Image 1 (tube, rainbow, N blue to C red):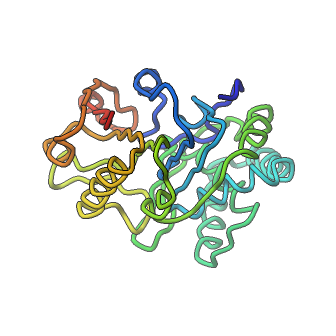
Image 2 (image 1 turned 60 degrees about the vertical axis):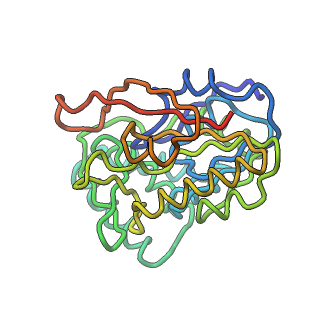
Length: 275
C-alpha cells in the first residue's frame, strides 16, 4: 500500500466513506491486483491506495475526470481556478450557465479538460453532490447555493501522483473484470438495488436495472470460481439476499445523507464476501 493522504475529489451518491472502516476490516490480508469496476468517487480506492489497481466506470464524463487529473492536473486546476473566480459575481446564474455548457459538451461528446473542470465544479455546487441525469443523459441537478472552492490543490496533486500507478478503464463492469486472475481482489459497488418496486437509483442514462444486478451476481459466481477475492456492497434487501445467499453477509446500519426526508435517512447496507 501507498501511504498517501488522499481524499475523494468529488462527492458521490452511495459513496463508501461511511462504510470504509468495515470494508478495510473485511478486506483480504493479501491479494495481487485491486479491481474496482464501479469507481464512482473513489472513496475505497483512495482509502486503501493499493499498489496495483484497475478502476472502471460506465460514466464517460466521470472517467474523463480521472484521466485529466492523472495526465493534466495543473491545467485542470487552472481551469477550475478561473471558474471559481468568475462564479463569485452571480453564483446561481453562473452555475446554470455552466451546467448548460457542460450538457452541450456531453451532447457533442467533447470529453476534454474543460468538461472535467465543469464536472468537478458542478459536483461541488450542486444539491448534495448528486450526479443525476435525465432521459437524454443530461445533468439536471439544481444549485446548492454554496460559494465553496471547487478543489483542494494539494489533494488533486496527491491524487494525480497516485493515479500514475492505476489503470483507468471506461465501460461495462464485466469487461473490466475479464482479465481478473486468482488472488486478485475485486470490490463491487454498483448502483444499488431498489428498496422497493417503485424506486431505483441510476446515475447514467443507461441505468442499472434488475437484469444488471442478476448479471453482476453471475459475475460474482464466476470470479469466485476463478479464485478471486470478491466483496460487494448494496442495500440490505430480500432481492440482494437471494442473489448472494451462498456467501458471507454482514449487515451495517448507515445514515443516508442524500435523502431529503430526515425520517428516511437511516437504513441498512450489507457487505457480501466470498471468503
